Image (cartoon, rainbow, N blue to C red; front, side):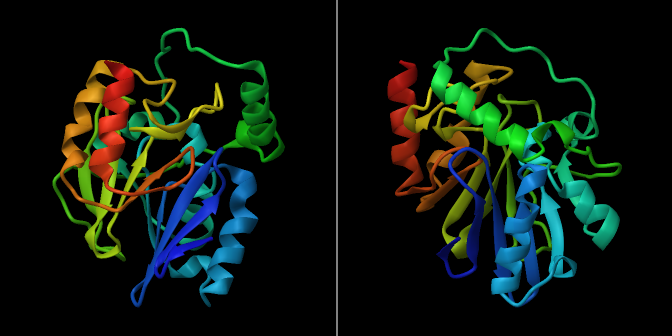
Length: 237
């Protein structure tokens, strides 16, 4: 789905990843779950592109519901997969620490689990190789993405800021749909390793002025990122 020229969402409010396209090719931010592969192909085809035109995959963190077809792109099409150094082992299949007890509603949780199961969420293949990136860098990829450290949800969580698109991709640094409760609107994401750290990290994106805030779960937030952060802090207080 085109959000604006050069910016496309693949997936839905349960699980989403994003495609950036310009005259140098395409960049994928996160890789959803395996069964969303046909949606990626359809979006590329509408742009006159193929998987070979993807110059890189940048993962916002190493959790499995963001890795979906990253290894497929790397193995079959030579697309490099990048993740923050502090999340590299998680992306490669290393352990994920247990988090605290989460609030949930049976219907919302069942819908999320059924959706991910039907689309191969339990069959995600971890990347065999990743490029380790650091915060504070602008990558030589379509959109010239700028990497911002957002530790909290995981040690190596990042936001990906693309000024030319007025967009910031936040992974699970925040959510606009809690997949366990169905609650909508900007909020802390469930399954966060260190909630206080994740809340503090929001200061790093609050001043960007980006009009598109793009999470891995939930609808795109089309409004000032500072307002999204303000609402999250109001919930947390």
